[in-house]
Image (cartoon, rainbow, N blue to C red):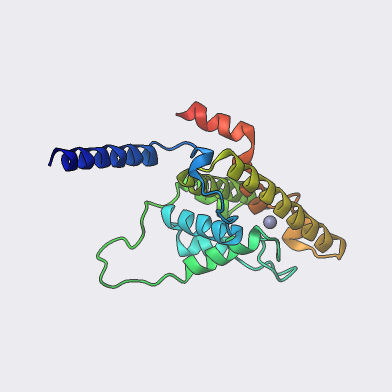
Length: 216
Ligand SMILES: [Zn+2]
């Protein structure tokens, strides 16, 4: 009897330790990552980071429509570099979010958040393309940082993510340059960088981590 009581107590102690570890945040220790864990599906991760961000920040359909609008001069979505490996999963998430159903049985607000503040909204949807893309970059940066924080990456996993995002940005920028050199005008001619690629790389900059620490 005493033995089984002790065994139960040991189990409970182990369980509460595990729960405490899982809610305290920060990095997982390397030994907590399964040795044979496959590399993440980065397309999927980017898609869900953006989709969750859109839901969390409760972007209105009007805002999504403005952000995904087609550029009349080159025929692609103005804010997304077509075929870029960061932009395309994000674009898919925007369209998926835009197609979310309306539920008649939900009384009141359908969305999960209060929406973006007026200033951010104005900067996102009006004014110069540089301003709009700067705000878009900040959103993507925040959305991806949030998803990664919840995953508590080990240092190795973080390094793999950083490298993958660098490779993807290079591909995206090469595409942007090829569009420019092929004479595509409109937003592409004015874009110095890709807001989605920059937003997906920023969470891995040391300054970004320092800023987050300062805010705690
Ligand atoms: Zn891109």
